[in-house]
Image: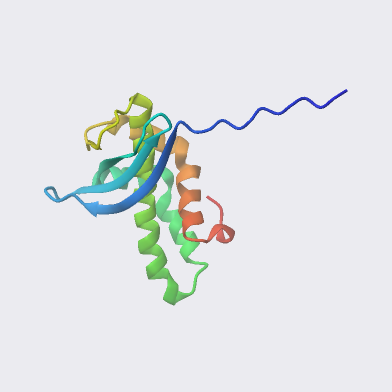
Length: 154
């Protein structure tokens, strides 16, 4: 019996590249923004999408993901002199990946080929609801980008 041909892996419809952030919104304290370059396969070029989240929503997401206890466990494996840098970077990475999750929600709802903003009001409840199910993804992305994958699980 001949082996069955394997299906080719599905090519993602969008290519998403993190551009920069998180940084405070220019006009509103309490808001953080991350910017992504998004290109759909059928588009000739990419667009920049700014994703806003409230610091309160970030705090809720950290609670839902158990981020603080997880981070304390990870930081305890590091030398004292490394902890502050890793802690700051981990917090930024969590926000970046939270924004990426919100961007995924916006893409799922339909995205036009134009530079745009996913406002703080958009997908607020959906993001809160998605975080518990995406906890492992969020934490593993932080570990990977910190190059600490061998230091502890998500």
